Amino acid sequence: MPLTVKCPICSTSVEWNTTSLFKPFCSERCKLIDLGDWASEKHSIPVKDNIDPDMIDDIGYDEE
Image: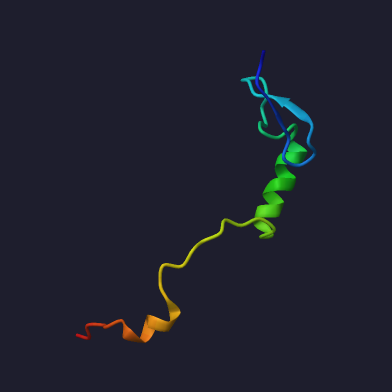
């Protein structure tokens, strides 16, 4: 039984194999819609800051 996934844009079932050119998307249209969403920043990857803003003044800089 082939693996099937749902297209992230329209939820159409897509077989995950070498003949599915746009996987995980069902079509080039859905692929381009997703790309446009990333380009317009509708999607983003959350980033956690490692620097505490309250301690920024405590960081010493070596001046030459």
